[in-house]
Image (cartoon, rainbow, N blue to C red; front, side, top):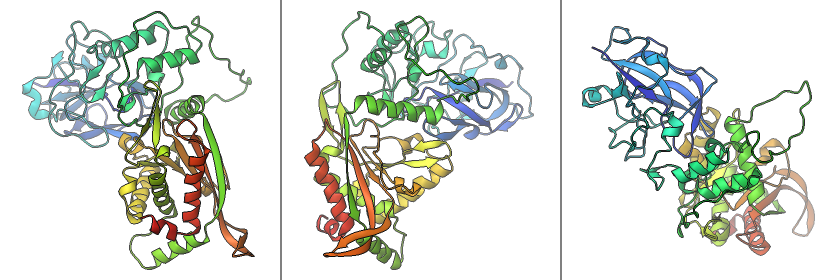
Amino acid sequence: MAQVLEFRLPDLGEGLTEAEIVRWLVAVGDVVAVDQPVVEVETAKAMVEVPCPYAGVVTARFGEEGGELPVGAPLLTVAVGASDGTAGDSPGGAASGSEPAGAALPGPVSDGSASSGAVVNGSAADGSAASETSGNVLVGYGTGAPAARRRRIRPDTAALPAAEALAQEDDDGQCGPVPVISPLVRRLAREHGLDLRQLAGSGPDGLILRADVEYAMRAAGLAARPGPPSPPASRTPPRPAPVAAPRSPRVPAGRGTPPRSAPASPGGERIPLRGVRGAVAAKLSRSRTEIPDATCWVDADATELMAARTAMNAVGGPRISLVALFARICTAALARHPELNSTVDLAAGEIVRLPEVHLGFAAQTERGLVVPVVKDAHRRSVESLSEEFARLTEAARHSALTPGDLTGGTFTLNNYGVFGVDGSTPIINHPEAAMLGIGRIVPKPWVHRGELAVRQVVQLSLTFDHRVCDGGTAGGFLRHVADCVEQPAVLLRGL
């Protein structure tokens, strides 16, 4: 007799709470294997295929293409043990969308993956189905070892909607390696009409803290209600990940004073700010609101750098990209000026200097602006940097970047010269402290060795957080970058 298992949208990690269904890869009646991708979803960070942890026959799908589902919502049901294409003993029962009593909610496991939240004919899956499932889901990486443990569920939460049931976590708000918002924070947001799915978290791995809710309240013009004091902030916070923030909070009617908006023209087109576009809009707005930034710039003669690149590529081996050379220069400059490889912990009132350089670079794709991250850029050779830039750029073009490829950056490189422009004032990629912008490299008149000549000139701009350093430090960083561009031998002396 077939058992009907319910597979719910797993926790995609990195603070993401919902995903848009882009394309179903299976239909009702299809036979699926363990770890077979069943649906393609798009989050605010990446487009990924979700593998099913069960082998059997698909009996129902939940959600239409183009629609959004919250984490924990039913995704599909599979009849395990049915190989003839039938739907098992209770056709239609699993497709009703209701949650049977005792349904297991998805939760983190010890290896950082997400439990699938299986339901077997109305009860949580047991060992009888273990041979039919992989036990956990790692979005973007396939599935692997069986789940070690499930999130603790308090009594009477099975009958609640997924979003409310997740609020019944442990009081410390932590549950395994995936951050879980504490009930105190959820209650504060609920009392003031704020949707947590639309807030950006400043805690570890994007965890939403009480300070984030209070900031959203102030931004929306809401008065804080009396409540218990916020817990003290950690004095040694881990490196924040520059997670693309969700959309800005909306204020329900009747609560406070909503922000004013210009009236749209009668025939104007309305484009929803969601997905990547909404995440970028909220993140840039937060950067402008929180970070007191300043910009300095300089023109540099890049003739020698271009000649050095040509010579390096002439000897064979991996092709050296121009952005890789600038990345290598940046890591050398950050070693001299570590203030710019840092972040500000507002809760603790501290500047946190980060030991590793994880270099993000802005990439324009059909889905919008994304910032892939080259991890440990300071330890890579220029050849390794070129290869990693090429890999991430190709993945971005095919919407194959994973959440891990898009988080953890500490400094960002923005090559806007590819758009044919000379200069710009970059907006810092919150919560980082600086971004270097590179304009186009074009022939221009230049005084070289006392004579007027035509040289390859580039404009460099540095936007920095004035809280972490003053203009002297920022100018010193930018001057060192320009010196390395004009005389690549300067970079060799620093190695």
